[in-house]
Length: 283
DNA sequence: ATGGGGGCCTGCCGGC
DNA sequence: TGCCGGCAGGCCCCCA
Image 1 (tube, rainbow, N blue to C red):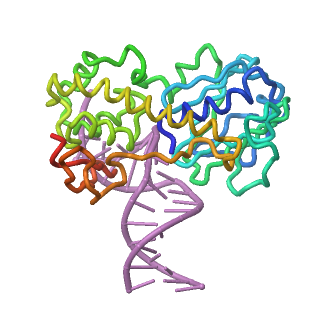
Image 2: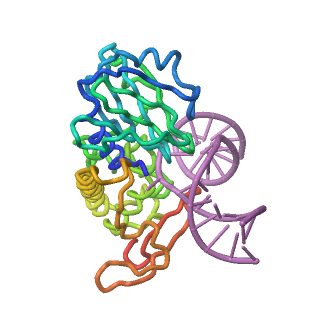
Image 3: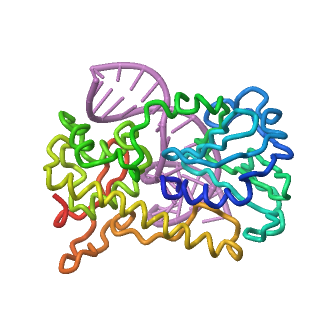
């Protein structure tokens, strides 16, 4: 599930259980996820205090008192479960261990953070905090879509000369960092832009619509995640998996929700990934 | 340089 | 019930 809004929601869910808290014990159940874990990861985490949880694109960064930063990526199927939280905001009792619980952090406040990732496309790494942005996974990332650097002028400049479809361009993390397949589809629908339009042929008007729409889509999703966090106490303990109602994503054949339209949502494949859009509304 | 496709993994769902 | 193909929210890497 993890695109930017989901990662941000996970970060917010983890923060009260982790920030300012010492990692009493780190349990690492396998040598790798997508890549090998860093050398002696469990030892380097044990005893460290988590100073702050940050997010960059779809990565969670935990700055530690040791001068290192823990990088966490959820891949396609990664989840972070919080249990035993003494603040009473989360599930109180530790659940039984599950298949694919790859890393478990026992916090000094009694909280337990369990990283579960069936497909193992996720990642964890450690790096010096003062050189975090130079990490190979972060160095080439484009601007945050919710930040000031992501503007209409910036987007137009970056799309100039690009013959790739706008759909693929927005999924390119070097152009803008944090969008994934769902929110690109949703943003293009809201901005009434066809996913097959060539990036370089985005008119000024369309670009002007697109930037604020991207922000709105992401903020709406973060807000929805935040509201689901409040219900977390009676939820089953999963962070990052929310009921969303999408306008186009996953709605192939269903009627377009634009008032007066109702045309069936079409699904096409672009660079190996599904795109959903309304042929009538988006051009 | 750019763009397209393959591959990494497991789980789930629909069809036969 | 079981098997099989297709599909999945990400991203690196290779090739043309």
